[in-house]
Amino acid sequence: MSNYRLANQIEDTIDTHIIISKQFRIFFQSYALAFNKQQNRFGTLFQTPFKRALVNDDDYFTHLIYYIHSNPQKHNLIGDFRNWKWSSYK
Image 1: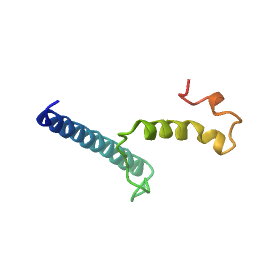
Image 2 (image 1 turned 45 degrees about the vertical axis):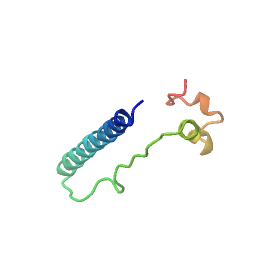
Image 3 (image 1 turned 90 degrees about the vertical axis):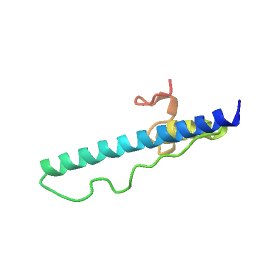
Image 4 (image 1 turned 45 degrees about the horizontal axis):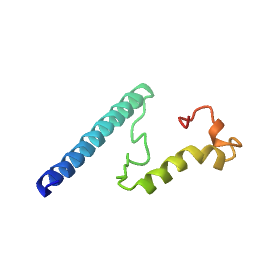
């Protein structure tokens, strides 16, 4: 693969992340405005801003999947995370 094509792929990936992040930001801002109006309140609704992390390593990706699915078991909500009703594990 040429360096030019690789550079374009990286730029496309970054552009995609920017677009998705912006859309989530707009969604959360709109929700907060509507909620604040409905509840007659003002100020921030979410304490921390939306964050994302680039996952570009298979081992890290595997770790993240395990971390997400094992949380109910870690916090003693269930004995075996594979039986968690609301999990997408299966």
